[in-house]
Structure formats: structure tokens, C-alpha cells
Image 1 (cartoon, rainbow, N blue to C red):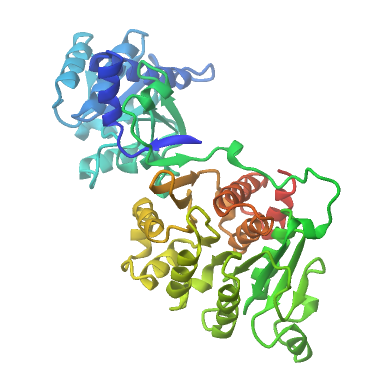
Image 2: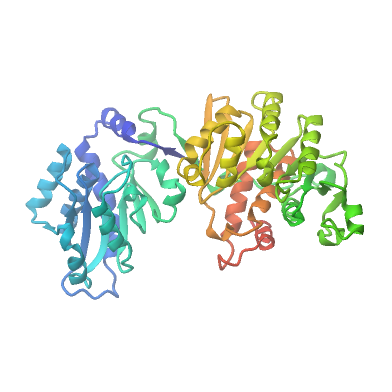
Length: 509
């Protein structure tokens, strides 16, 4: 796992004090990292230059602009033509000094009003544009003139685009982001995924660990790595199917959802998987031509009208239906009778008013440090869940924009729940009794291929399989989410992924 920080200014200050690094030296290291990124892309043997390779740098009035002026000075001395488009005079002392240094080498400037003409005129030589306008401390709306310039540059496919620290306002469409000192939380917002490009961490004068530990402050979140996934590899041979748990899934109005989840569970190590009817039962509905005909269920899966005696975990909600009160009641009654049973709740289950009572009971029954419940909403479902649980009314857009804060709020109240909030970057939240705080883990491996009906059902099956095998809820959530995302990357054409091909990819991890 890698540490993520919402604000690294405290770390910057601590590094200056602890390691005797001047602000000037740290800015030079930042500019050196940007220079390396520029140099890797400004020269290309196949490029034809009318004059000489040219770099455009957009500078703001803060220290990000200071990085840009320092970069300009370094590039000019490598016989690269540099033009700066600035957005106001530097406001900080160090940025003013860097501008004076760049000006001493006769750096060129272009105004906002002349930029279109400049880009057209220099089209044969201009190869790289660098965004040094606003850093990670910027909040609010971008000025109109900045947006206009960014729109012009974003549309230019011939330019390699580099962002300093973070794409300004998450609006500049970077091919690469060189972030300074430590990884920022904002780099892993959902809307950041399409604008950050490759993320490179710059050393500002001390190693990453030294920088992160200088202030002895806790990270705001953790970025998951592939090595954090633990597959359910079977290490013993003297075993049988009962050794690996029995997962029960409620089969609701859309039986395909439970069928997909069941297949995923079977392919992720569960020894037995049973689909449990939510209403009259498989046998009666089969006779009447209803939805639960066993002919429509994969032969690997068992079906039943009741819960198996050896059920070790329950998954319900996917495809349940929002008016299937009988099915919902069947699930919660079973959970009340089996208070310590591992369970995963998804999708339609969040639309029932009784969800709050169920969560309240399960959290009060769970002992400290023994979490047995996983929730897997997407943003719209999480919006509904927050309202049902009395935590406020939020639009889907507000949930996406404030997902870190809302996950913390939810998990701080429901301390014995693991929340998987799906999205472009998946957030996994859980209250840590050891840290006395909510811990958030981010899975950034997911791809657009997962934007397909049934993908969420596969995730439910994966996590449910691990719960059935008596893995802890947080461990199950992390490993299932990573397996789900990494499997999606194995498809050749991202538009072609189906739940079944996703499950097949799981077997190849």
C-alpha cells in the first residue's frame, strides 16, 4: 500500500525543518523532475523541427508557477525554446525569484489573447505543454480564461501534456502528472482518472519515506497495490468441498444477478454455492413457468427454497427487486437468527426502509474488531443508503465529488461495516479500532470495461466467496475488489467484457 495525503504542505514544512532543506532547493528538485518528464518527450527522431524544439509553460501566481519558471530556466540552457503564458505576476517570494532567474536568460512570453496564434505559428516546433498554474491546494472554480486556454491545449493531440503536482482544477488533460514529494488524495478522485495520465512521484531532496515521515502525520488514505491481493490458494490436500465454505445467495426478481454472483463465487474458491429462492420457491415457480426455473440456472449451482444448514456466508440484494419485500424479509430474518453470520449486502437491498434497523442491529451485535458485514453500493445506491440511514440527502453528483468525506462519515457511524463504494476508483472504508479512525483504501486498477451489467454481481460473488471461506470482511473486500479490477484489465477490447469473460479472467490471475 502507498500513503495518500489530502494536503502535503505540513510535510513540506517538516522536511525543511528536519532535513535543513531550503524552499529554493526543494523547488529546484521539483523543476528537475519536470525537466526529466519534458526531455523524455520533446525530442523524437521522427519529428521535423522548423527551428528548434519548443516547450510551452503555463504559470500561475503561486509556487506552482515558481516551479514553471525554474523549469523554463533549466530548459533554455539545453537549447530548447521556451515560451511562458502567465496568469498574473508571482505572489510568493520564491516564485518572484524564479521568475527573475528565468527573465535573466531572456525567456519568451505570450499573452492569453495571443495564444491561439502562437500555437498555430509554432505547430511544427511545439511538442510539450506544461501546466504549472494551480497545485493541489487549489479549490473552487477555474477562471474563465484558464479554462479557455486549457480547452485549446487539451484539444491539441500533437502536444505531450505534463501537469505539475496535479492537473489544475482537474481540468487540464495531462498525459503525465509529476506530483511533488508524496501522492495526493485528489489524484484519485473519480474525475481525476481521465486527466492525470501517468503519475510520477518527484523526489524533492529526500527519499519518499523520509518525506512522508518527517511530520509523523497519518495518511488520509491508502492506495492499494497488486501485492495487497491475497488469492484463496488452497494449501492443504486433505480437504473436501465443505472445507471451503457454503455460500448462500438470495435469488430475486432478476435471477441472472444471483446466478452470475454464484458462478463468480464458485470460481473464487467457495466449496459450495446455493441460490435460495426469495418467494414461493424454485419448485412451484418452475411448474408455473415463473422466473425460477432450474433450467435457467447454471448446472454448477445448487438451488433451494431454504437456507442450507451449513451456510457460512450470505449474499443478497443484487437483482432482488425494490418491491420484493418477501425476499428482503427472508434475508433479514435469517440474519437475525444467525447474528454472527458473514454477509454481503448489495444493490436493491439499500432501497428498503428496514436497512437502517438491520445495520444498527448487526453493528451492535458485532464485537469490537470483528466486522462481518460488507456493503457494495455504487454512488446512486450510496446516496439512497445515506438517506435511509438518516445521514442526509445527497445527489449522485455530490456523492461522487465528496466520496471520501461521506465514506468516512458512514463508516465512523457503522464501525463494524466494510463499505465498498464503486466508481472509477473504488473506495473501501472501515473503522480501525487500533487507529481509532476510519481507514480508506483506494483501488485504482479498475477500467471502463467494468461498465457493463453484471460486473457488480461478479464482485459480490468474489467477496462472498472469501467471506464463506472465513476470511475477514476487510481482507475479503480488498482482495475481491483487486481481483475484480485486475481481471478487467485482461480483456483485449474493453467494450467486449461480459460477466462470464470477467469470471474466466479471474481464473487466470
